[in-house]
Length: 480
Image (cartoon, rainbow, N blue to C red; front, side, top):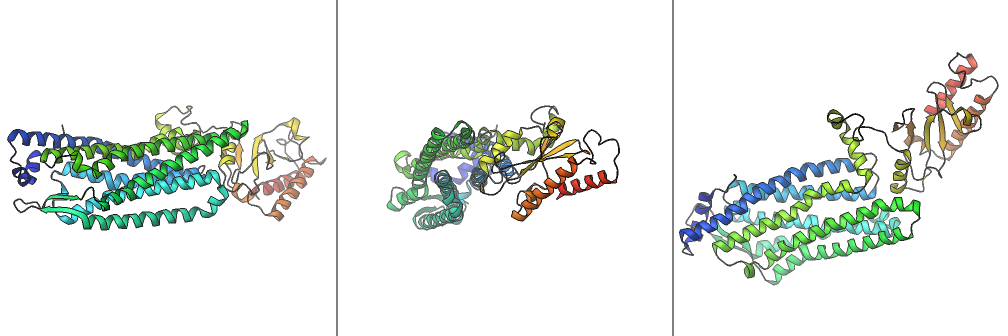
C-alpha cells in the first residue's frame, strides 16, 4: 500500500513539534492523519488525472470534427474542455507531485511557497471566469443569437480582462499578506507559509476569485434554462426536435456548474475561516491538510468527469465519436455492430445540420444520389440519370434541405452515406453560377429525353457517337 514517508515528515516538522511538547502518541496521531491525506491524494489524484486528461483531449478532438465544427454549442464545450484540461494539469499535478515527493515542496523556500499559492489562485480564477464568460455567451446565443455573432469575440476579450485584473489583485495580496516563518534548526527553509485570514483583503480576494463568478454563473444558468423552456413550450412538433438537443445540453451544463459550485463551497470555507475551524497545533494543521485534499478531489472530479457527461448530450456527439474511433473499434467489435457500421439516416443528419447551421440565410443546395427509379425517371425533369453508376442525381431545393452548407450526400445501393468533395463548391455558387447550373440541367434533361439518346434500359448495350457525347457532357456537368 502506498504510504507517505513519515520519517521525512517528522524531520521537516521537528522544530514545529518541539514547540508544542508533543508526546510520542500525539506525534503518531499527527503522522496517521498525514498518511491518510497523502495516500488519498496519491490514489484519487492519479486516478482523476488518468481519466480527465485523455478524456478531455478526446472531447476536444471529437468536438472539432467535421460534423460539429460549426456548432456554436460545441464551440463552447470545446473551450470548457480545454480549460478543464489546463486546470487538471496545473492544479492536480501539483498535489500529486507533493503527495509522492515526501516533504512539502512549499517548505523549501519562500518563493516556492508563493508560487504554489499563485498556481492555486490562477487555476481557480482562470476556470471560474472563463466558465462564466462561456455561460454568458451561451445565454446570449439563446436570447439574441444575431447580436451574439457580432459580439462573441468581445465577450471573451472582456472575460480575459476581468480574469487578469482579478488575478493581479490576488498576486499583490498574496505577496503582501503571506505569513512566512523561517526554520533555523532543520535543513528546510520554512516552518510555516500561509496567507492571513479574516482580514478585509482576504475576504475581498475570496469574493473576487470565487463567490462573484460562481453567483453570476448560477444566475446565467437559471436564465438559460428558462429561455430553453420558453422555446420548448412555444415550439411545434418538428421544431422540438431541434430544441431538444440544446435543452438537454443546457440542463447538463447547469448540473455540471452546480457540482462545481458545491465543490468550491468547502474550499472557500476552509481557506476563509481556517482559524475558526482548525486549532493552531500539529494535529490541527494535519486535519486542515486532509480537509483541503478532500475538497480538492471534489473540485477536480468535476473537471475530470465532464468529459463523460458529454456523451449524454445526444446522438450527434456519439455519432462523431464513433466516426473518430471507428478504425480502433473495427478491430475489437463486430463489423456489423452499430459502433463500427457507417450507416446512418439522411433525415437525422439533415435535421442536425439544419438546427446547428450558423449562416441559415445562405442558399443551400444538396445533391443526392439514389437508386434509379425507372417509373419516376420519365416524369421528373430535375433528375439526371447516370447509366455508368446506375443511379440518379437529384437536385434538392431549400425547402427540402434548410441550412445545409456543405451537404452533398451520396446514397448508394447499400444505403451508405458520405460527403461528396464538390459539395462546398456547389453550395457556394453565385447567382450566375446557379443560373448556369439550371441551364445545364435542363439541357441535359432534354438531351436524355430526345429520340436518339440512350435510355436507362439500353445503357449496357453499347451506344453510338451521339450517346457517348451525351454521357461525356453529363459527366462534365456532374464534375462541375
